[in-house]
Image 1 (cartoon, rainbow, N blue to C red):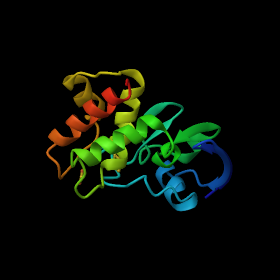
Image 2: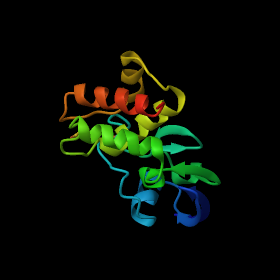
Image 3: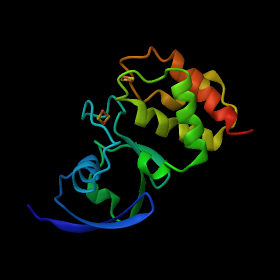
Length: 157
Ligand code: FES
Ligand code: FES
């Protein structure tokens, strides 16, 4: 298998990584670069747990080849630890008990943060659409929806 070196900007830092033609973005992020907030669930594009942003768009990193990301910007939850909007959302998730096992939480937060960037006061339907690609097996979604609504609103104050 032919290996090649690609350039990835992850959370603002440039990395050169050696990848094979079938190496997935999720594996490079977790195994080569150590971004463990990126979780793997179904591996088939169905659960959304592996969501990261690539060039500003939310994608399932289990479905993306690392080589497709050559020269692109990737954002994971680790890149948002000091972001005010993310802090508000995290606080809201905690206040509303919106995480149980926590496996879906990084992806839920990334999708919520993406929504908050575009909508200061999203409707319930808009929240549902924003998180619709991510499966949570624990919470029943009510707490998550409340958290996203409150977290986005707090971002406007
Ligand atoms: S692990 Fe990627 S969509 Fe489920
Ligand atoms: S909190 Fe367990 S899967 Fe969502």
